[in-house]
Image (tube, rainbow, N blue to C red; front, side, top):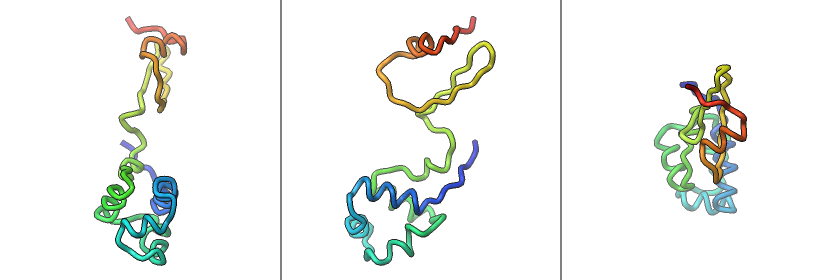
Length: 108
């Protein structure tokens, strides 16, 4: 497993704006004054696990998952030539239909 290097404060800032619309709403839910958001969260490259857990709960987003390069949504498909494809998507077709679309032969 690889651990990704990310700027957690920037990621939280994006998700907070997207999920709650305003930083004021985020600050209120976190129980801190809006003027402290930059110092305590947004300008941080790392947070302790308790703070990250609280942020994750408030925003209903698993920020811990950002540190791991692979996730349950990523699937690795391998064809006969050992070509690996990593894909993250939502779709309304079966694995067999995907295999046909990508012209991947089934291993025997």
